[in-house]
Image (tube, rainbow over all chains, first blue to last red; front, top):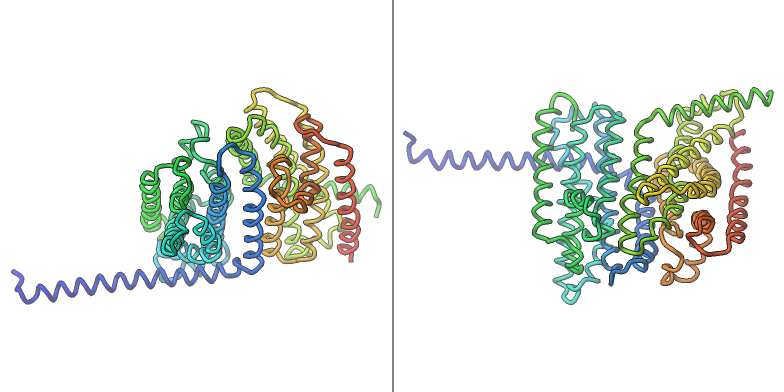
Length: 284
Length: 251
C-alpha cells in the first residue's frame, strides 16, 4: 500500500510532468510559428499589403455600394461590407496557409522540414496559428471601422469587446482552415490533385458562404451546402457580434455549435491524421 | 529566316503551349467549375435579391472579366520561361522572340473562349432555353484579351520578379473587374462620385460588357460610341506595347 507521505510527492511529480508537457507543447508550437513567420514574411511584403488594401477598399466603395443599390433589401450595404471584409480575410489566410504548407512540405524545403525535431501536427498547428496572428493586424482597421459603425459604438467598452471578439474568432477560424488544409494535404499525394482540391474547395466555400447574400435568399438545394460551410458560420457569428439585423442571419447558437464542431473536428483530424499518416512518411 | 519556316515553328510552339496548359487537368477543371459557380450561385442568388433579369445581365459582364483574369497565369509563366530559369532555352529557339509572347496570348484567348462558352452554357441550362445570340459576348471579350495580355506581358517584362507579378497583377485584374459595369447596371452607380463613375464607364471591361448587352438587347444605349471608345483604347494599348515588347525582347 502506498504510504501517505509518498502521495503528495507523486502528485507533485505528475503536476511537474504535466507542466513540462504543456511547456514542451507551447515551445513546439512557438517554434513552428517562428518557422511559419519565416516563410510568410517574404509573402507579406509591402506590395502584398498595398494590393490587398486596394482590393478591399475598391470592394467596399464600388462593389458593395453598387450591389446594395441593386437589391430590394433595406440597409443591405451594412450587411455586405462586413461580408466583403471577412471573406477577404478568409481568402488571405486560406492562400497563405496553403502557400506555407506547400512550401514547407512539397517544395525544396521539405527535407529540412522533415528532419525538424517537432511532431508534425505541432508544425501544422504552429503554421496555422502564426498565419492567423500575422494576418489579423492587416484587418484590424477594417474590424475597428465595422465595430465603430455597429450599434455597440455607444460605449468604448462595447467597441473594444466587438473588436476583441472578432479578432479571437479570426484566430479560431484560422485553426479550422489550417486543420481543413492539413487534412487535404495528408490525404492527397499527387501535387496536381492537391492543387485542384485546394482551389476547388476554396472556390466552393467562397461562393456558398453567406458573405454576399443572406441564407434566406439561397435556393433550397444550396442551403444545405451553405449550412455545412464553415465560412458561413464564421461570417454569421462575426455579423452577429457587429449587430447586423438578426432577421438576415442564422441563429447564433446553432452557428456557434457548428463552428466549434468544425474547429475541434479539424484539429482532431490534424493531430490523429498526422500521427497515423504523416509520421515517418509524408508531412501534414 | 524564311517566313514560312518561321510560321511553321511558331505553330509548333503554339502546340507546345497548348500541350503544357491543357494537359494540366487542374487548370481546365478549375476554370470549368469556377465559371459554372459564378452564374449558378452568384448570378442566381442576386437575381432573387434584385430582379429576375439580373442573371441575363451579368452573363456578358462575367465573360468580359475573364479577359482580365485568365491571361494572368499563361502570361505570368512567360517570366519563368523567357526571363527566368528557361531564358537560355527560350533565347536560342529558332523563332522570333515576340512569338514567345504571341503563343501565350493565343493560349489566353483559348482559355477565355472555353470559360465563356461554359458560362453561357450554364446560363442556358438555368434559363431553360438555348440562346445562341449570347455567343456574341465572346467577340469583344476576345479582342480585349489580346490587349490585356499585352499589358500583363509588358508589366512582367518590366518587373522581372515572379512573386511581385503574381501579387500585383491578380489585384490589378480584380480592381479592373470590380470597378466596371460587369456586375451592376450603370444606374446602381448613382452614389459613386461622378469622376469615378466616368472612369468606371470607360473601363475596357465595362465597354466590352455593355457592347455585348446592347447587341443582345439587355441594355439600351449608343453602341457606336462605345465601340469607338473601346477601339481607341485597345489601339492605344496594343500598338505601342507590341512595338516596345518586340524591340525589347529582340535585344
